[in-house]
Amino acid sequence: MIFLGIRVPAGVSPAAAPVATVPPAVLDAQTYPVAVEGELDPELSRWLWVVKWLLAIPHYVVLAFLWLAFFVLTVIAFFAILFTGRYPRGIFDVNVGILRWTWRVGFYAFALRPDRYPPFTLDPVDYSATIEIPYPDQLSRGLVLMKWWLLAIPHYIVLSVLVGGWSAWAWQGGSGNWHVQPPGLVHVFALFAGVMLLFTGQYPQDLYRLVLGINRWFFRVVAYASLMRDEYPPFRLDR
Image (cartoon, rainbow, N blue to C red):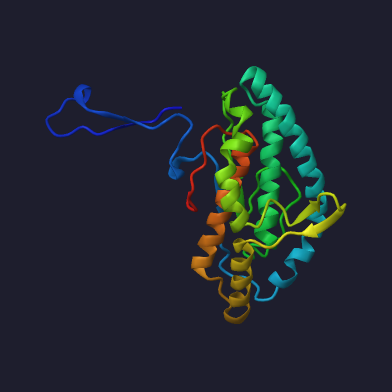
């Protein structure tokens, strides 16, 4: 996809105006086709955030199976894109639904903002945390071979600091044991915001925007690495 930026100086006809181009598969953050939103509730319980992560345990169990399905479906989509240049629409809709579910639960349990319990559904619903990813009509067969590992490495490095790895738990190779990964900055920010909420009754606006921005970055990279878009994700916290 090529975006043309055209500026016509005074006295110059449109035909003679210089044309600036942006390389294919690169978009500015303001137009990146992965919309991650979260609304800050006007009234939040001062103490409920302390137990939200426990209340969300049923969701964790379901999401463990959903992310196993996400991996399998993404492998199937990989071969479909490689041979046809298209992401199977049914698989795409299911995977977007899994991302929606994940974001709603993370928004509730760790971002500390909504007190309303997230629904158990893949479908878009009226909830304060949303993700929308438009379906791509065509995808590059060549990019599918390297964008999920080689091209995304710079993002993986940054996100390892911001979110502390792709999951809170990891399998320790060779020893056969599960271990907890160190928390990322987003968890530190969320904890600090929770303490502020406990004592002041207000969620700090600056921390809200920061935590939301980190999650936007994270889900943009997940969508790119799972082959759902060809546009390279921007290194920015905003939209």
